Image (cartoon, rainbow, N blue to C red; front, side, top):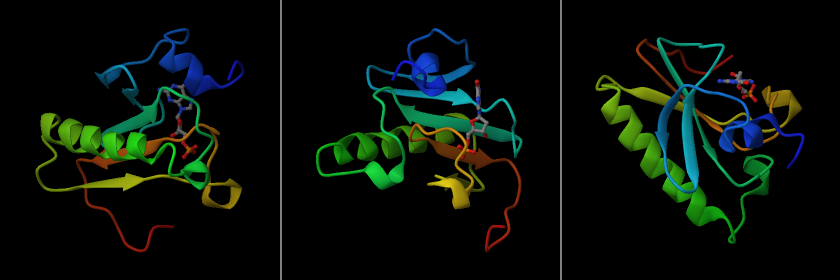
Length: 113
Ligand code: DGP
């Protein structure tokens, strides 16, 4: 999508600090980190949110979770990590391109705020 900031990051039109990249997935550091490690993992193809995951694109989501496990291991998150996908306005989604926050390096509370 031409006006989507994460599509532009995926295309290399906006720079990012990359943690992982392959043909279909990009992981890059969040510019407003909420934990010592805070990486965003996105599909390069535009999917608006978790509400738009379907049979047609769910293999991509499975691949994203493989990438999350790989990046968490490479970044040494051995004590644990949290994966968050905010979906919709009331959940706090600010960028309408599916993304998974990979957060680690500190303890997390439950339930989340
Ligand atoms: P959410 O609020 O769940 O939609 O998360 C969006 C995240 O994206 C938020 O933590 C800040 C991050 N973000 C927004 N714009 C940029 C950007 O241009 N570069 C990077 N690295 N992160 C961004």
